[in-house]
Length: 423
Image (cartoon, rainbow, N blue to C red):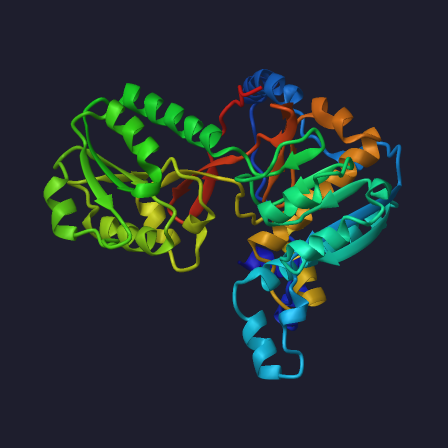
């Protein structure tokens, strides 16, 4: 501590501020020549790995296109917001609904547009309120759609399909895949659920190979019968607890009686329901001890595992493994974005606004560098604040095949790196 104070005399009289820079004095150590030679050989071996590693960064590439027309269509439903009443307006904007989702997405998108402008890319943004109304969609179809380099939205499948029926410009479904009519100009940014669950099953199979003697419990809802069946095939002696809309409660006495002692207990939680996830993780955490270790898995992709009502500590104690479209970030760049976003919009960025920023930034940069989106496909995976993208053209449409397999350890959320063999 004395060394730090000597290196930073100002901290004795000034109060530390956010982002203050401290000089940390390092202790010198005399190293024998033989030790240096050993270290040098070690570095040479490791350098093969480092030199082969390539992190794609589109903003460092040369731009071939710098002028863009971008359209954004979302169900703001501003015609239903009672602007005369402050109370009603605050109530609407304080809830999770189509209006707030649209606004949050727009905030993230507009943030990306400003970043792109700062890079010298001119984006002319046109925003349209679909009002979640098919008559309004008919009206918007009369726009000159060919002038747009990229169209993001509509959000809802029926609106998207109707709007895109005669459109030929590249159009993005940013939040959903189900119900979207496939055409050659359609781009879906969410990764297919079966691809994500398959990757988790690969991890489960490798874990089984390492440890055959474990006690398995499957907790599943009606929406995940398929994954439950696949788990039963792998664990024919597993205990199964079914949950439905009328019975969302898991009895702790039942799980307690099913747990094995002096062996690992693998619990598979196949649901995306936040209340079930919260109650089951709390229950399992209370039953986890040195004599009865519990590990938690899920093949279901859901951002609900990152809900603020679900304890990170409890998930860490259970070494929880699951697939996700996004990964929480603590990077320096993200922290700068986080503070700048709050300053600009007055509230914290949520998962929707961060995805909006990431995908807009990524798509425009891909076209800026390669002139046409399809030319960017061989470039491979790009990673941004919380989302990553690796697009492929398959089954007559473009789709993102990148996602995360996450593991909780203590209070950390770590990515399990797995090769992507899907073409």
